[in-house]
Picture 1: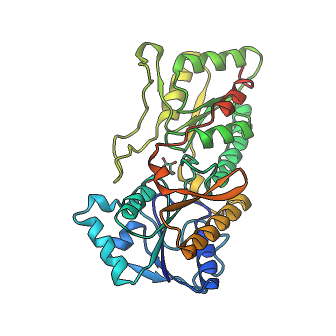
Picture 2: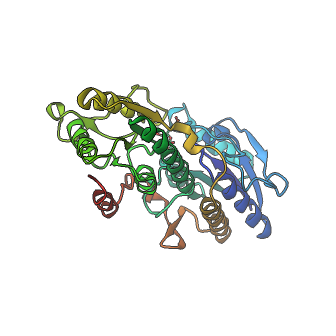
Picture 3: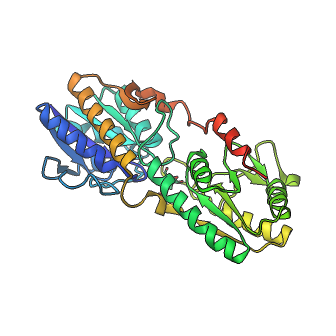
Length: 348
Ligand code: F6P
């Protein structure tokens, strides 16, 4: 069997561990593997690369993806699906393993329904995919954000400042919550719980009235924030731009700047903001992500070998399982309410 592999969407630490595992296991099981470059773009343009033992040597610890990635949406391209099917046929691909998040696997669902034999591997630092307890890349992102929060503590304390740190995660608060708890954030603001500027200021004031001279506010890029007077039922996003990507997602960012300015104006405490941005996605994967990526890759190759298509590998508890790939269309996995409650105990 000839197995095609591609990585789509935002890059993510651990992708190379998955690719390596797919290739190593496929070879052991007597199959050939080929890589498509830059996500679905590679299939649209018939841009492939050999993917054998040599190509995956020494990549386990490397961040990013040796295959390249993009947010290309083939269903926004004229005759996109037909072009993908032609590339698969002309390359003699029997099975496809797309590694991606909501958007990349959303395309995979459509292709599976069009008859393509595929097995999906879930990927995102945001950890917001349905059907799996964790995605690889998340642990690395959390550790990077936690280290940043540790560093911001010492400078905030030295200057008697409030520092608002903006964390990735789109519309889910997983990275923010984990990094905020691990880093001891004084306020942890996630999209699942809209908040008002007044509430945040009151919380910080209470803390400073108790004798603290600094505060760290950890806020998700997708947080909903409004002033009490402007607050609708849902709050509203603070965005620095209204630009959208190929899958129609608004590019988030800007909440920390607005919040820091409001805090300084309303409370008179000196405030700064820091946007962690793509630093959270770069560099070497953690041990956890290398192991999870490897386990996902192994199981994906095994499923292809067993002829079990239309599935997505996942981790539930500590077991690697597979679920119907259509699960991906069920909306995002929001931050657990029970976890949110834990944070409440540590608020002033
Ligand atoms: O989904 C991963 C993610 O890093 C989000 O946390 C973030 O909002 C988005 O991708 C950024 O996308 P881009 O790399 O296209 O700027």
